[in-house]
Image (cartoon, rainbow, N blue to C red):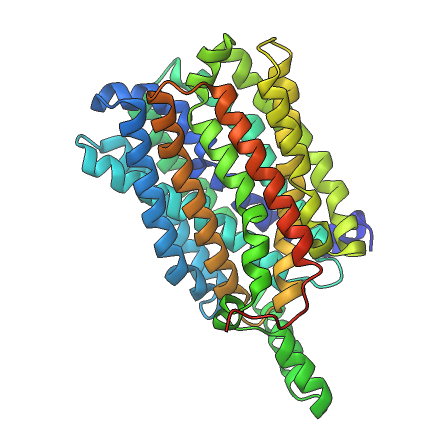
Amino acid sequence: MSYFTLIGQHWRFLAFGFALTFVSSFGQTFFIALFSDDVRSAFDLSHGEYGACYSGATLASGFTIIWLGQKLDTVDLRIFTAVLCLGLATAALAMALALIVIVLVVAIYMLRLFGQGLLSHTALTSMARYFDETRGKAMSLAGLGFPAGEAVLPVLTVWVLATLTWRQSWMLIAGIVLVLVLPAALWLLRGHGARHQQHVQRLSMESSATHGQRAESRRRQWSRADVLRDVRFYMMLPAIMAPGFIVTGLFFHQLHLIEFKGWDKQWFALCFIAFAGAQLPAGIIAGPLVDRFTGRRLLPLFVLPMLGALIVLMSGSHTLLAPLFMVLLGMTSGVGGPIVGSMWPEVYGVKHLGAIRAMATSIMVFGTAGSPITMGWLIDAGVSMDAIAAMCAGYTIVAALLAWAANRTRVGASLE
């Protein structure tokens, strides 16, 4: 099925996935980092102290996702989405009204939980669950919300901050989520009941197949406990975590990176357009590749453009290196959604997909929690951004090799 046919048949549900990934930008590091200088100044925090606050809040959100994310397997998607939108609006309001550090940490925790964590989790899990043969294309289309947010919001936010204070900006975000996003998401989910009923019937037919087919079905429909005993899971994790850890850390400390390289702040904000622009074709190309070759087989390859970006970052400070760096990062981000998102149901089935993805998402969040504070400490200790990029490049190489080895590890190899 072509992209045009898929959109023609399922445009409303695909638009729902796009909307959620776009709005998740409000909880993403690249967006929150746009306010870093103002926030650190308001609360008198150093790079390391602010990184510690951010990492602690992110880490707490990761633990929460393990529990809350699995509810997507049992709670109606429309109710779940409404709760997430209300939570995100509350988080933005708390950010605007925070006067002490503890309230700031709680606000960041909620932004990371409802925005970066659960909105992304809900969008991609829904695409993976309700599409089968066109799963890669569906996840590519829904994932376009990520580059759309990264292209539009940095430039728009710089413009808004020239007119409003950072606190007023967060109040505006809260209003947008409540007045526009919530009603739009629920409207796009019209008719979802019939879609979910078809999904339930498909699972029921699988469970009522012949005895031999039932055994195969059980093998494919792994529980979260089964996944935790699978050695391949731990071999794939470093590659899955690599983009979140590295990109989060670099974007969180982007203002220091800009200063270190001597780049113009507004120029780097414009480079997010290159980052997003690279994601779009990369994601579109990745969809058919995933449907043909599977996400599992492509997993070792998707971090390679990011490795190239890190090499570019280490190579100098020329102004034109900034967009090249962002393009290569964008390629990994663009292909990562369809590849990683499709890999989970391919390897472990869809019956417990919410619980499995929630666990995986929480682990990735733990990775994103570690990078701001780790890089913050390194910066405070005088380590250059080039040296930090070199460390990240070494990690990326090891992660790719482990993911490659996971494809050659027999199914059923366990930690028991």
